[in-house]
Length: 259
Image (cartoon, rainbow, N blue to C red; front, side, top):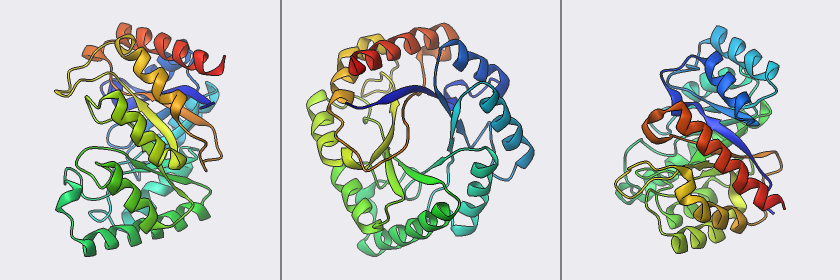
C-alpha cells in the first residue's frame, strides 16, 4: 500500500499568486503544496515564507519547499539560507537538485561525485538539526538521471535524512518505471505526477491513469516515515480546468490504491 496523498507543485502555476494557488488546491481537495523556490518563495524572503506558510496552514495544507539549491553549484551557506526559508514556511521537507543543473551524470568524474555526496551529507546533517528532511530531485541531467547513478549517490551520501523525490523520465516505458521503482523505491519520499511523452508534450493525466496506478501500487515499503504526497506537476496548457481534471484523476488513482 503506497499511502500517497494528493498534492500540487506550484511550478504548475508560476504566474499565479500564492493565495490563488491555495484556493485552487483546496477546491481540488488536495492535502499539500510544494512551493517553488524560484518564483513563489525565494530563499531569504522571510516575509513571503511566513505569509505563505500561514496561508497554507489556514487552508489545512501541508507544505514542502521545492528549492533549486544545487550542490556543488550551491554551497552549505546557500543551503542554510534555503533551509531557514523552509523553516519559516513551516515546511517539513526541502527538495534540492543533486549536482550541477542540466549536467548529465555520465559527465562527472568519481572525484566530482564524491564531492557532491560529501556536500549533500553536510546539508542533510544541517537539515536534520532543524527537523527538516531532504528530498533529491529525480530528474534528467542530474546525478539521479539513471537508476544506477541515483543508487550510487544515495549510498555515497550515506545519511538517513536524504530521500528521493521520484518522477519518471518523460516517456519512460512502464516496464522500466516498475523496474526502477523496485530498485530505488525504499528511498522514495514523494513523487511528482504528470503525463508527458518523450518529446515533453503534455497530456491529460487520465491518459496515463493505468500507468500511475501500476507505478504507485508497485512502490515498496520505504524508510520514509512521514506523510507521502503524489504531487501534480504541470498540466496541459497550464489551464486551471485541466488542473481540476487532473486532480480528479489523481484522486481516483489514489482511492483505488486505498481500496
